[in-house]
Image (cartoon, rainbow, N blue to C red; front, side, top):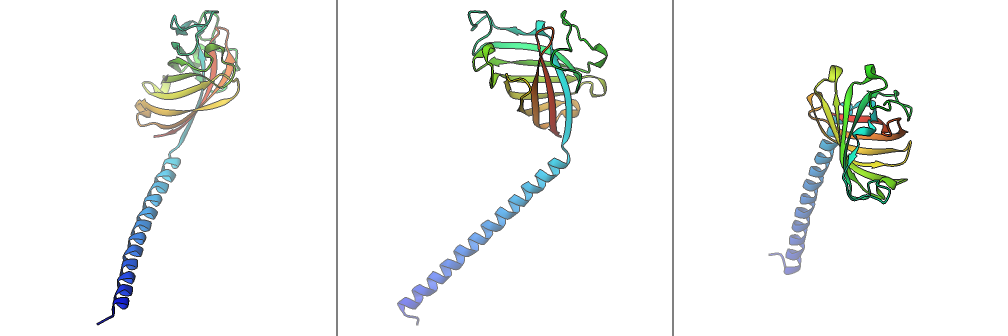
Length: 206
């Protein structure tokens, strides 16, 4: 019969083996899970598509709430708005073109979609000079070979010209009905209708 000290030693060794065994199982499971997600990530990267285009907002379609506003009548923090514009091929806009003073597209033969944006002013409202000034949901509806398809993004827009910000792609329809990924938005300037000119790059997983 093993004495009390020997029995305790044997029980301790047995307990340690059980602990080590459990750690090995957990480690193996962790490696398998990590490997799975890495494989999924590599597969997703392989299907990544890049889409680029410009948007010219029509100033007359920018409509905001009657309050809250600044003394000069411009929308302040919390003001809600909706607006629309034309989608052009990348490189069409230089910061001040794209929409005629009467709201018509400057290059009608190049327009291949409609941009619709709704949201709220944040920061210092329309007086914001740098950083986020609105938080919005944007809808991009395409014509031509993508007729009936659309993309949707959500997030902040920044007031700085020629500074790129990112927005999550939250969905789409048609050819983009399973779209996810990231969109990059750059403010190019203001066109003749006093609407914004924007450049977009979409990194789309679908």
